[in-house]
Structure formats: C-alpha cells, structure tokens
Length: 210
Image (cartoon, rainbow, N blue to C red):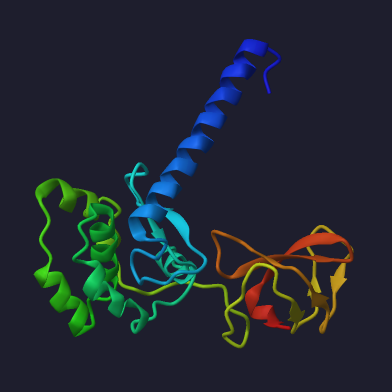
C-alpha cells in the first residue's frame, strides 16, 4: 500500500463503499427473490451471480445453478426444466441467463421450443449474445482422473505411475498419496499437489481419486 496517507484514505474509503454497495445489492436481491434461487427456486446456499457482461446486474442463485453456469459441473437437463418458468421472469438479468442456458441445451427439443417462444428487445438481445455463449454447446471440460472420475479442489489422489520430477531429485513413486490437491485453472489435464513438502504439477492421467 502507498505510504501517502491521503491516498491510503481514499483507497480504504473506496473499498468500504464497494463492500457496502455489494451488501446492499445482495439484500435487494434477497428481498426481490424472497430468498430463493431466481432460476430454480431452491432456498439454500444462495449467492449473487453477476451476469456477464453487465456486472451491475446480478441474480440470486443456488450452488448447483452457479456450478453449472460456470461450467464446473456437467449440465443436468432435468434440473434445468426450471427454465420453462424462469424464462418468463420480469427481471431482464434472469431472462438473459435463462436464454444463455437454453442455448446450451438447444439440442434437446424442449429447450429449442422454449427459445422459439422467447422475445427480447434489441438491447437485451445484444446483452444476451455479448458473451458468445449461445454459439457453444453444453459440453463441459472437467478435471478427471485416469478412471474418468471428476476431481475437485481439496481431493485426495493416488499416483498410478512412478514419476520423475523435472529439475528435482524427487521421485514420486507409484501409490503415493497426494492430499488437498488444487486444480490448474487453465488446463484440465493438470493438478497441483505436495509431495515431500514440494508442490508439483501432476498429469491427471497418472492418478486416481483416493
């Protein structure tokens, strides 16, 4: 942080103002949604989802909706039947998210039919298309072990092959247990873990979930 006290004051003030604004926004969304997910109506583990590419607009959604929106889980078609109702929301942000999700599911007849019924004005349609998400299918790239099991941050894994670590004398032997792994964000074929106190990158094809 800067040593200038005036500069530090304004930075602190800005942070407090942002925190207060976020708190107010969340309270407004809780009131608007009656403390339920604005997509599926679930009432637990709710968080604010800022709708790309308009971060001034948010919706309140549950953990499952969040994970699948952020492509951290495979799309559950049965779960997203809720969009048949959410798409008619009076809230533009809910409409936009519903439209984007329906496009991911458009290979299914019910989702394609729902899309045909939706209508946006020019500005809302431009917002809905702004991420380009509507041009992609619903496939999700996830970190998976050698057996196809989905990996998560914090998992314990077991090496299925002895590995030499480049630039180190460390030899990670077959059967070595690696606890509290971290997923490499931009590469679904890699995880990070500690072996003998050293953090290394491990290919997912050489491990199985513990």
